[in-house]
Length: 264
Image 1 (cartoon, rainbow, N blue to C red):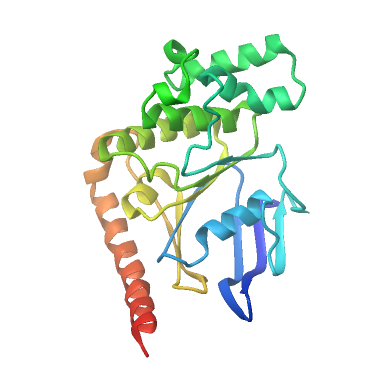
Image 2: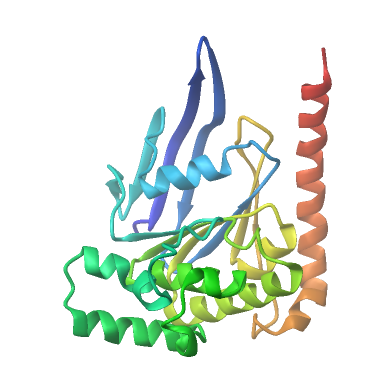
């Protein structure tokens, strides 16, 4: 079966004046339809650069990025992107933010309204449809951003540390909300995070990157008790075992990076 997302020997190098910096090198990753895959690793190992390459915002220096077996040539409606900074339009209501992509695609008003009603209900924002982003909490803003990404019904969601700006309680609630959304839609999700707990709780598989230039150090299948959105899952033996394994892997790379950056 053709992978939903496939990276073949992908590398990306940034040029800064006369110097070059390799974000990641020779990455080969396959993600199947309906998988939720998180990527963790030390700062600067190319996680966001890789996600933006799949989104079509960046073109890798070497190698191929494919979606459904076809090379990615740029952004497309088959891939919805959720950013860390919400990226909402403050002059549009919550509803009109959700409908923005549909309006740009020429979808008629009645169909836009029906789709936004569906999503507002799914994420618990129906009462706030006519509010503006500056009038709601960070968690509500991120629910709006996720709904906007889902509005055009993309096959793939690409999420770049979407909960990093939230307080601890809101972050946990949004994680539970995302698990429910994934259960309901079975979208293919590629998720970048610095939080090991978050990666384990959300994912069917966690990929650990090495320090820069990023390479795949280890891939761990995540098997947790169901239902996944039960908060007690976070204290299960399976969760703790996965956390210990990933913590050791990430710490090893972080220490290596620190030593390299501290050497004269």
